[in-house]
Length: 194
Image (cartoon, rainbow, N blue to C red; front, side, top):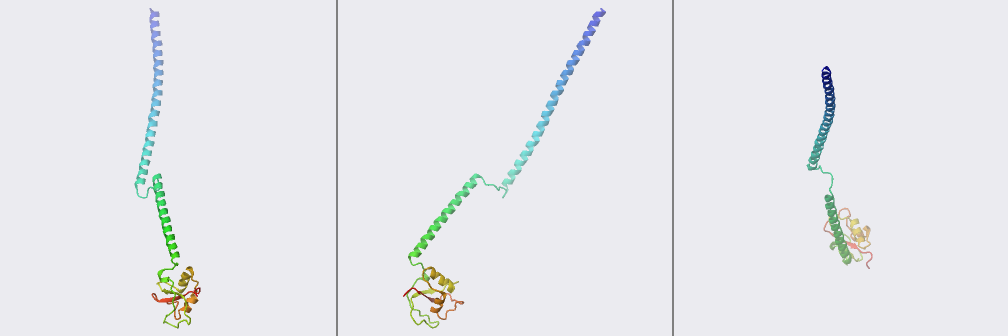
């Protein structure tokens, strides 16, 4: 009987040791799972902080875009609209060029002088000073605001009348080139006319 009790006691000790070993192994597994779970929770917290930071940056960028002058970038639609506007302006420029060329061509066909520069064959009858001794062919011109004798001569030369400042002054004795009177008629001689 003693051996029986010894046997039961040994069995109890063995069972207790096995249970204790099994409990210890289970506890280790639980601790490992708790450690991994804590790592996951920490990673999730870090990810949540990153998401909050990104959301704040997006919100800040949206605020900047909504502020006047905050959008310094053009979208594809903006560029397309700008290109269309540039094309429209260029078309208007080309139309204006054609109108200018047509007007210049029309001026060329009418002799190329404006109404105040229209050629007239006349004799000079300016009574403001001595008159030339020989009647000349040329043009009557009415002095306009801002005119100079040099500018008048240049304008007539551009129209094919090869007249000089000296010839204009000689044809208009008493004309003061430094004090032209607006509205006064002067005679522009045509050296080419016979």
